Length: 247
Image (cartoon, rainbow, N blue to C red; front, side):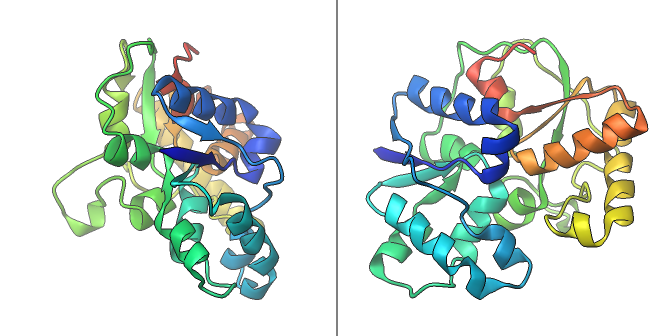
C-alpha cells in the first residue's frame, strides 16, 4: 500500500517525537510512506467549534494532499474522527469520499489493517496507564465503553501487550474523559482543569509511572494538569512505545 502520513498541528508543534515515531514504526513494518510537505490542519478545530464553513479550505487542501494514497494514517483519533465522520464542509466528490473511507488512526491501522502480531524491537520496562480519548473510544471504537456494559476489548492494549517488559496499571475510571475536549478546555477552563487533575491522580494512585495515549492533545492537557498539581507522572504517545522508546 501507498500510505500518506498526516501529522496533526499539535504534534507538529509540541510533540514532534510522536510524529517521527509514527513514520519510523510504519517503515519498520514495511510500509511505503510519504509525508506531503504542504499539509496543514485538517479543519477539526473549526468543525468542533460549530464553525463548519470555516473548515472548508483546510478540508479541500487535505483532499488535494491525500487523495492519491491508498490509505491515510495519522497518530490522532480526533483528527481521524473529523475526516471520516464530519468532513462535510466541501462538496462530496469521489476524491473526498475516497479520503474519508480510507483514513485511519494509527492504532486501528496497525490492529485492523496490518494485523501486527509482534514488535520485536520494542521494550518498555515501566508501568503504564492507558488513556483512551473520547474520540478513539466512542467514535472510532478502538476500545469498549463501560456505559454500554459490553464485552471488554481494547485495540491499543492488544498492541501494547506485545511489548517486552511493559506493565499495566488500571485506574478506577479507565474510560472517563480527561477534560480536554478541544475548545471545551478554553470555554470551560475550570471544569476542564478539574477533570484533568482527577484523571492524572486516578492513574497515579493506580501505580502508573506513565500515561500512554494515542492522542497527543489529551496528553498535552493532562501533562499540564499534572505539572500544576504536582502529580509525579510522565506521558508518552503509543507510537513511541511501539517504535522502541525505552523512556
